[in-house]
Length: 66
Image 1 (cartoon, one colour):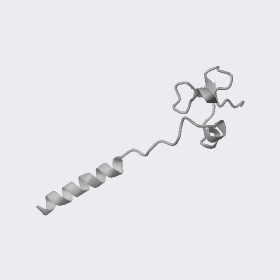
Image 2 (tube, helix red, strand yellow):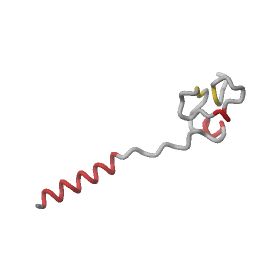
Image 3 (tube, helix red, strand yellow):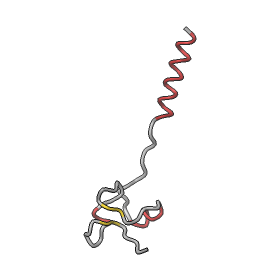
Image 4 (tube, one colour):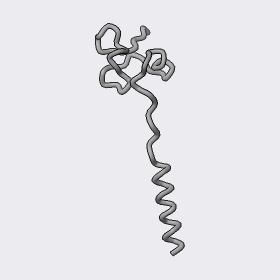
């Protein structure tokens, strides 16, 4: 019986430890927030992309010249 309780506790504890962390706040409100997170030149398939970050409407948000 003790083994069952220990096994159950280990499984529950393991499941909690495996839970994915919540993703930060993309899409970003401002490009400065994206830059601070190391993101720039985001295309439409990037989870951080948002139309309001794409000033010229070319499909690339928070453009930075290299």
